[in-house]
Image 1 (cartoon, rainbow, N blue to C red):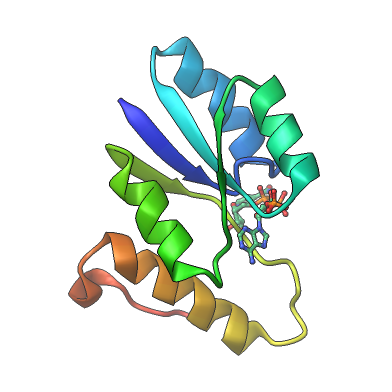
Image 2 (cartoon, rainbow, N blue to C red):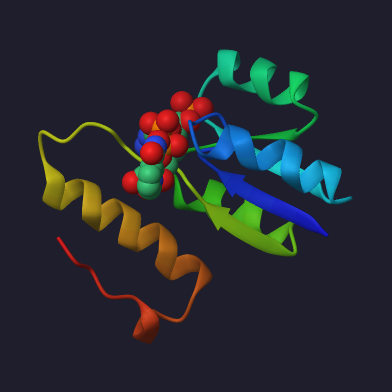
Length: 104
Ligand SMILES: NC(=O)c1ccc[n+]([C@@H]2O[C@H](COP(=O)([O-])OP(=O)(O)OC[C@H]3O[C@@H](n4cnc5c(N)ncnc54)[C@H](OP(=O)(O)O)[C@@H]3O)[C@@H](O)[C@H]2O)c1
């Protein structure tokens, strides 16, 4: 299976990569930066450039994959409502809207 992993370089995401690869899966990891791309390649993942703000990049990553694991997390908590809105918007691309509830 090919898994689109957002937040692939994060604390949680970076531990998921070896688990998936060890289980025989391919990982398509989302990152915003060149440094992130280098790190993903070193970890054995394929690189998908994009962000939570770029919905086309999220659609594209998911459409190339069999599953999505969402671990991207914007740590800028100066505007938590906007952070939640962005995250919900991303999740709604992957699951039916009726099943998404925003809990601030
Ligand atoms: N850490 C914990 O102990 C813990 C425990 C329970 C739940 N969680 C949850 O697990 C999730 C991940 O947490 P974490 O600790 O792994 O976070 P983290 O280490 O801060 O990593 C967040 C990742 O999200 C990506 N990211 C940040 N802003 C983004 C944006 N605007 N668009 C796309 N990607 C973005 C970053 O990737 P790039 O910089 O490569 O783009 C980064 O690798 C969060 O939802 C968190 O609440 C964490």
